Length: 66
Image (cartoon, rainbow, N blue to C red; front, side, top):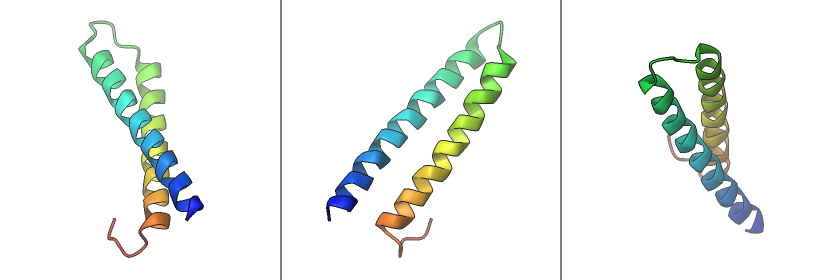
């Protein structure tokens, strides 16, 4: 049970980081001088976080469809 609580906490932290990166990307897209390298790195990090979020969700709720 403690492991589930820890996983849920980690899940929320990952989701918050994912949202923050999404906001950062939106800000970058609005900028007249887009830093393509930074955009690419943020997108890659966002995808990595998404995969980690799905992995933890499957550990917590294995019967739920992804």
